[in-house]
Length: 232
Image (cartoon, rainbow, N blue to C red; front, side, top):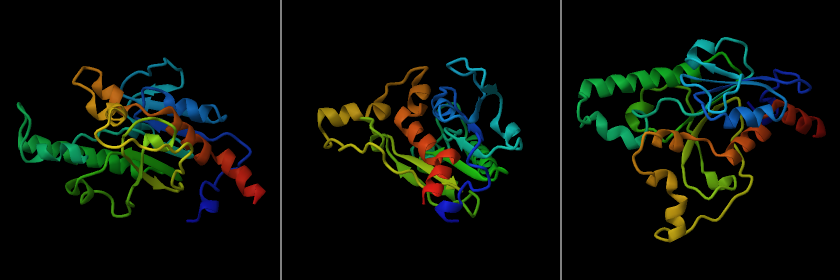
């Protein structure tokens, strides 16, 4: 599918129904809402901004509600990403190997449900996967686009995979020059990875950067794409 055909199923003159899954911060929801879309977020936890455009629940229960675009920002990925592959062979204290592999199967099932949702345009964000996870994913799953916060004006490192269906890859908007390894600036940019253990560490590490969300809304907005198509 070419870029000009993406999201062509809808009239560029109206707002679109967009669901942002696995988000409590509201960062992506607000970025799309600022462009006039009918956008909702859904997560098992309440929204941090207490928005009335947030659904408390499982995103899988809302995939068949006529959305134009689905963006799943931080699905349960502990057993899918490279950083957690070691637990499959050597479980953490109090857990068994069978439990780890069962967690992996549940993570794959969740990811697959979102990827196969009856929605024309889908983005599922996930850290880089290990081979055991990739081997269990849908056959049509493409290689992810790997993006960094410093593509979008943030002094930070956080390599993130975007699995895209019906959407073009994101283009950098405010690309920065990363500092050299070993420097104080490099350590500062690595705050996400260097965050010390705490009850809110998961929230800090999963938060979407505002520049990243703004790029998604700008480049994937059907309204913006419609104007671009008309100009061409």
